[in-house]
Length: 330
Image (cartoon, rainbow, N blue to C red; front, side, top):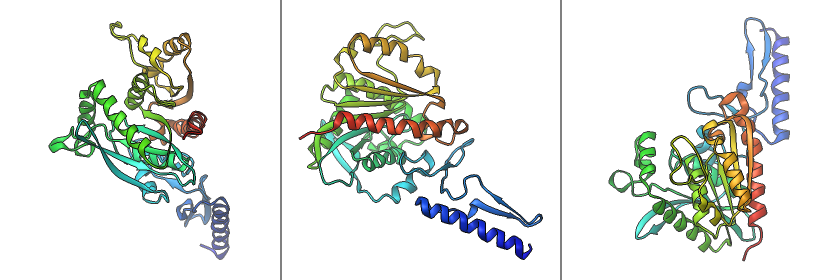
């Protein structure tokens, strides 16, 4: 490489680092590479932007965005670097231990409590990462392991070997069991001295569906955010069809639904749910993000950038909705 080429590289590296420092982002040395044969500098389109790795076939690295939860494969690293206090805790449901993760915001006044409801992937680092991001946005986040005591030797999600085991065990829970566990987690959060007396829920995938059902049974909720989950179905509906249950009449809290455009299975339930909620005089605000798939918030590297775009658009909407309906309190 000629001295001129070295000088060009130095200038390019300095520029990228300078841009990163001004943006408050660490520059990645790998963002700029040199072709030793041609002597040409090749600058990555993401130069100067830190990247979060993702896990899984077909997943792409995504730009680091500290204003939304980390994508699945980057959640643990983000958690380890979090300046906020997070801790494992336990409560009981009818004498049975229930494991929780609690993330606390950095604020001087009391905060609303948001329960984070996991889906078929179980209680994991990503769910804890969502809780940490909620804390960054000013909420006390309480994430229960709904599978506590349901695994081998009385273990929870971590004791179940694969996703099929997680799904099978989660499906074995009755509605009464799920509601009792969510009530216990909610009660734990509301008893915290830093809680302001307001509570909300946020659920994902089957956790979003469980969230919708819980909103029917828990009249004390102030808000519910459903990520790609469906409303309770009426008993006796024809196979393959969906009819929202009349029990939606019991809902007191406003509901926000956030969905990927490439998710026909769940999205087919939205029009009937909208009509039912409107007829009942309930708040059901929906947003469908075109091109995004099911589970977009935890898989931001999929769908050719549409999942990342959906995540960047959906999260602020969710936070704004929660703040609007949980402000004030004791």
